[in-house]
Image 1 (cartoon, rainbow, N blue to C red):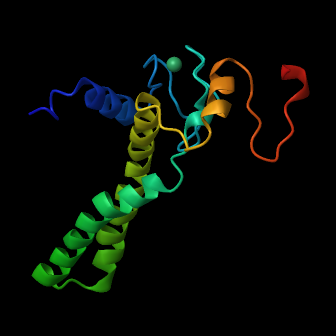
Image 2 (image 1 turned 120 degrees about the vertical axis):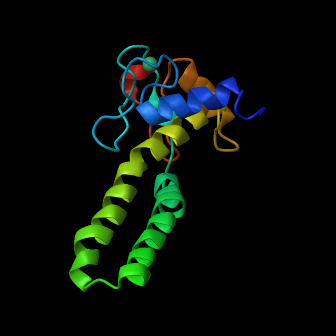
Length: 148
Ligand SMILES: [Zn+2]
């Protein structure tokens, strides 16, 4: 029950499912289907903190594709249909299910990173400069001249 009543978890699930900014909840965090916007147009949240990497693909495979594969196997075992039934039913279910779930998984990961203040170990100083309104150069990158 503690998990259901967890306000932070509800906020993460809500922001991720709707794909809205985890800070203000008013604008989309995406600039396209899966590409994150540079920053929130409403509150200015800079999305450079977000590194979902291949997390959405991992969750789409484990949580979406795995059960849907059993649907395809169930169709095969129960009905023994010709191959084109799988081409018309199983393949679209798997493809659309995985592609459709990538965006909410990415939204949940980004919202979770924001609310849990997840940062890579050893980059605290860079994040402090970034949050102070200055760009922190990436490792090996020269600082932006006009932002000094
Ligand atoms: Zn915002």
